[in-house]
Length: 286
Image 1 (tube, rainbow, N blue to C red):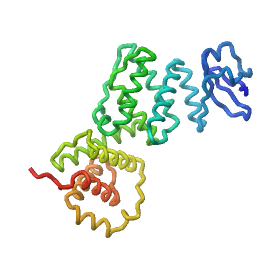
Image 2: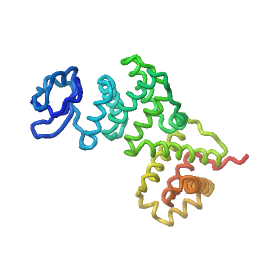
Image 3: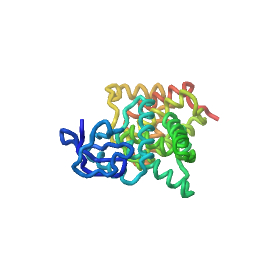
Image 4: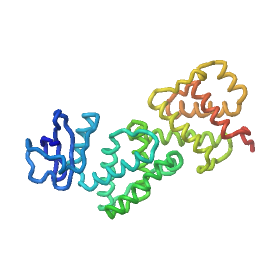
């Protein structure tokens, strides 16, 4: 198979069209050197083909490739493959773009002696442990392959990019979701007069529930379980788990008063059930 050069992005990257006139990006060491628009490129000279499903994402990728070093792109491509292999859910294809852009900028800042502190490091470690570990693994590979030791704060930033690709939202909303979840957990811990072990299975279950609850709240969607819409079921839960239901109401008040987000009766029920699961004995009164 051969491709027709549409644009030479740099010495290592070309924008080409295939036999169906579909636009895609190909890369390979020195593949663009001396090339001209309209020439053909044989498949056996290409190391990697980037074919995004969204034309707008494809354009963004082409734009990014014009501004970052080739080795930053190829390394990020390896990192994204590692991340996708180790996570059980599908990630937005734009992760390659956002992560390559972030890593390249982080390396540039490191070389210029500039570092950023991540104010959400603790919540990230608490609520996105798998993604945070992937972030740390990414830092190890960056140091191994490029000889650049980025700060641990960057592992947190990378984790947020991964979660962002999972939830299909923007980074600004991702920051809000993380702070929202942290605030909800603080309300719950204050209510029960306890601090949960961040390494425990119970806390992991609660954190996962709050993550996806926050996603529904910020994206304006709700879970759909027929039982949760049953008023009798809601009344039964509130009567049989009064302490946990009141805690869920406190979380709802926090969401509405601080974030102006409305928590549905359905969410109250689900949260009550989760709270009962990790607090079987009810609130600890001092």
